[in-house]
Length: 185
Image 1 (cartoon, rainbow, N blue to C red):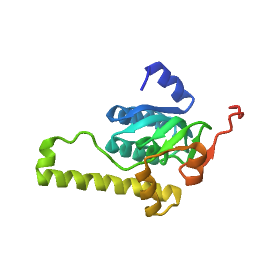
Image 2: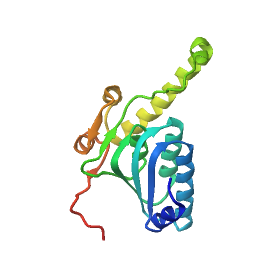
Image 3: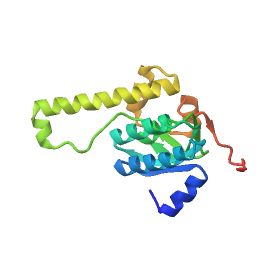
């Protein structure tokens, strides 16, 4: 998640950067950053997201940790928040995209299925059940945050399409597009 000094400097500015693959390393990075900020009284934070996604389990762990954080969380999409990055964004109180950023939601998938799992009906059934449980959790998050019905969320996930910031705003995945002329105070 980057050089420790840079992370420390960003935390001083109340910025948590989630960049790269959503995995166990990102989970631990998130936990450490939030623990440091909680030690400072849980100030309002900005969560900068720039990821292609990754592990559903890791993404849901990060989602839960951010939701649990007591200060106001503003999620800002830099370049793109795809897959679990889009789900993590939903944990934030305010969801923002930079004007040229994109957001992608899709169905759960896995590339780590061995032939042994496919040939063993019980293991295959357990994998399928686990994936459906993960998908239902993601549907519930997206339904709650977008206000869309399950059928529309399901149909959109099937399309596996990157949404522009404008499309993501219209769909309810973000609350606003940041004005590029806005100067931070």
